[in-house]
Length: 121
Image (cartoon, rainbow, N blue to C red; front, top):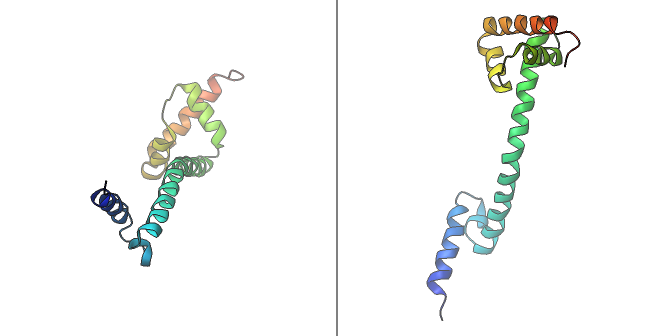
């Protein structure tokens, strides 16, 4: 059995994925296949890493905004939890940047939450 059409289809798929790569990486099948595989591995790993990086960014932004109100990040999050406020870090970071007045009210809510429930976890 001849493999011509099947091989061409398989090669074409890889070459299309390598479109835009520099030099023979986008032309030669063997080199293109190696680079497409490597790119796929990096994409897989970095999809996971991106989530961690965004969470760290949100925490840094919240921490900076909370410190400007004379509070620590840990105390702020603990106070929100005790006050029953269920906002995630993405929303809190957005509020800290875009809506500082609302964020200031959240800081007061967190302080009240800490004051109301001393010693309880």
